[in-house]
Amino acid sequence: MRIEDFLLTPSEGIPNNPALPVIVYHRALAGETELAKAFEARFLENGWKGCWRDGVYSYQHYHTRAHEVLGIARGEACLLIGGPDGRKIEVSAGDCLLLPAGTGHCRISADPDFLVIGAYPPGQEADIRTEPAKEEDFAAIRAVALPKADPIEGRGGAASRLWASR
Image (cartoon, rainbow, N blue to C red; front, top):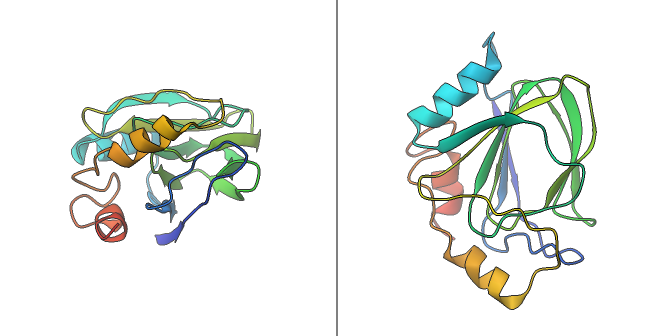
């Protein structure tokens, strides 16, 4: 597994998270055969709840009340992370993204069988926001609690290391 992280600045109404980097786990679950079940099990094992199966919306959106993990269970896609001025990221089965609260994301293109497993830290629920962020949105994003464990690596994992000092 290779881990990449990057910070984003606000982009055309998308707040992003000025303090916490996006974390990309390339080949997070390499070697697993049933990736959907493997991602669900790993997320739950590390305390992440509310698992869902779906894709990524084709419109730019963000969440002000939750961090979100996206495990790519099937297919390939090109995602735009961080709003119109953000980063295009190619993802494929086995990859995983950890999006801090406020991070804009949308699907640019995807295979027909593209499947994502998503989850949130305990006590957090995603509000789907598409409108330009207001000052109260930035305050809500800053107030979202850090997770107790990384969704892939557990306690002491990348989220703990990269987010703890922020």
